[in-house]
Image 1 (cartoon, rainbow, N blue to C red):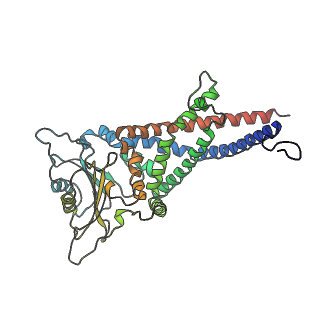
Image 2: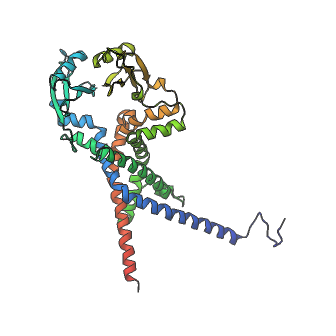
Image 3: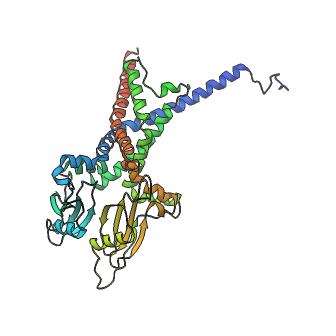
Length: 409
């Protein structure tokens, strides 16, 4: 069957096929130019932030190890045959309380980071200055303290300063929001970079390698391509989890909308005040939690921050919970001692809860042990290379464009 023009609709003219293919390529190139422009300006505007959070994040992956290496007398407690059993928690806290002002309030009791770690008890003192006391759990003796001023912008301790730079850019809540927004923009930058990387010509081998021999321009381009491509998945996960922590409430609301039935933060549960009844205290909360749930290492005990707040007791490395991240959080009424809720991998109610619970383990790399931590560490180190090569390519193109304009008659 032929059309009125005598040409079969099934077999169009060869010239028409070439014209269609050419039009498709032009459209693809036009879109590629638009994505390149978006990718360029995102890189120039928030690329420096990527360097900051990337490098500081690499340090924080091993923050406990680095801190202990820099401060061995403060943060190391080596058990021996004669002292391999921890002292009771009440003795550890009693030792810490002797180092702070009377009527100081406990902010957090943090357990050991490894068998040779110390306990860390943070206090808010009546003078409003915070003090962190470190205690050897095998002897219940204080190894030292750290002080944090009321209006301190830059902490006096290296690892603490690195953490605040990573989390807030040393700018408090404002910096925390800036980091979250920057992370969202960087996620868009990763997506546009992936679009630009996609080899339309089908030359997949070249898309994954640095070609040799090559000019300096080509090597710069390939370095940018490779250092962006291989860590892109890890960087994407780390950036998204960073948003979940810096904009936590909004992030949880989005997940609850996508996954109905997802519970919010356990700290939102409330205690029931009763006249004449005093808070049970940190040690009693610990006893209640361990009597109901056994196994695991203490991560931390977080006392209530208000008259209706709750105790949070958290354990990690809990046996037989999860092969990747075995963590259990227990919520306790501060007056009655009743367990209001427990969170663990085997107690999740929705996919949204699983997604939320995975954010911190993925962000820190701890979900997959040493391989996960090394992957996050390497991804952070790649960030300066990504930014530097991107700026170098933009600068060369800019100089070339200016040269052409200057040479035009």
